[in-house]
Structures are given as structure tokens and as C-alpha cells.
Length: 59
Image (cartoon, rainbow, N blue to C red):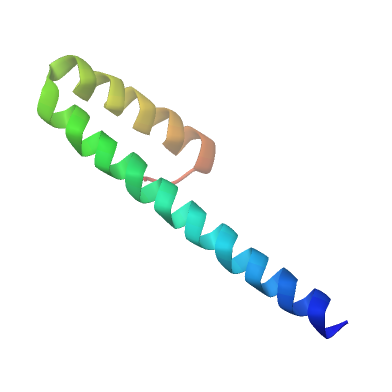
């Protein structure tokens, strides 16, 4: 029982680290897109608008 709890806890920690890692990569890519040109900026604004509609709050 203790082993199952330990593995579950470790699994959740690894999953949380992966989520944070992926979010940091996505945010880095957004900043790269913003530097590249106006088309990407418009695409990002549309993406952020979609995100605010889904979550109900500003990202």
C-alpha cells in the first residue's frame, strides 16, 4: 500500500513537471512569434481571444 501511494505521488509530481515544462515552451514560442511579424501577432491575439472564451478569464 505504501509503495502504491509513493508511486502515485511520484507520478503526479512528474506529470506536474511536464505540464510546467510544456507551458514554458509554449510561452517561449509565443514570444518568438511576436518578434517575427504582424501575421503571427494577429494569430496570437485570436488564439488568446479563443482561450478567454473557453476559460472565462484573461490568460
